Image (cartoon, rainbow, N blue to C red; front, side, top):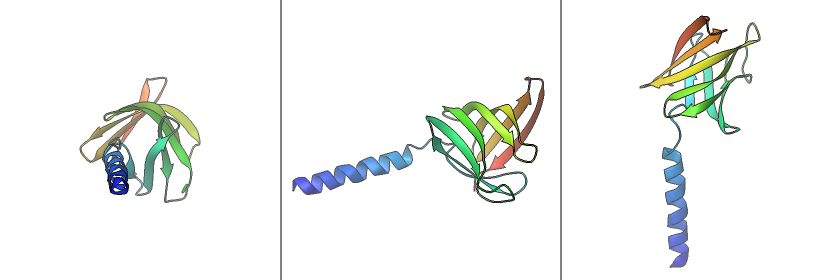
Length: 112
């Protein structure tokens, strides 16, 4: 009987953790049509390209929660890193990268 309760408790914890993922976690489609995966890493979140010519390259690290994040984003073609921010709006990830907080570019990635 105790074994059944232990198994039920473990399954409940696993199910709760699966639902507790931050909304940023998942796969996103970049403006170039590549897949970018965002996953927990080092107390924050890392963006890694999963397809395209830069597949396997980590292009961002962000901290935050509940749909608002700040960190660094790298342009893989130019290999330059910028201050960035991310915001989740429904199934869209709105990303902004800036140089000196003056010159900024934005992209919107849909969830896959």
